[in-house]
Amino acid sequence: MDQLQQPAFPDFLCESLSRAGLRGDWFSWYKPDEMPEPFRGLLVHEVDMTSTLERHHGEHMILEVLADGRAAGYYFREVILRGAETGRAAEFGLIEIEVGQFPEDLQEAILSGGIPLGGIMNESGMAYESRPLGYFSVAREKLPTKLSALGNGDTFYGRYNQLMRPDGSCLARILEIIPRSSDS
Image (cartoon, rainbow, N blue to C red):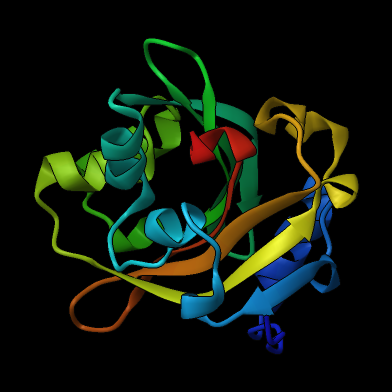
């Protein structure tokens, strides 16, 4: 695989990575067609991850918030999406949400931390676009202990994504990492 250069992370996302115990230079970046299956099918698309993971795993996703807070005008959180029936970890997400871009009722739902952002947006019918900015792998040894829910394996795959309004304004930036259990 040809390694690509890391996409430019905004300063506030670099701060979120640091809070999560991650560093941008730990990721190896790849072209979409160079991602191995089944991760290519799970990551290389312009749809939200919540609905993609629900289809793949055949179960509703629930949200486990590991950490959250506010910084630089953004609401950030570190989350694990888990299958509602199995409890199996389906994704780690590091997300920064521009809460002010959402209607008030959705802001409340987002800040409550009970439902994944993709689920909130899809249920509300809010128009948005998913625009992935890059695909990567990261060595398991680089991931902090708190991500042990992702399971074993030497390498994990993910994407750096933006959720955008149709007018081009950013709703959220998300770093998404898929566990090895997703290859089943």
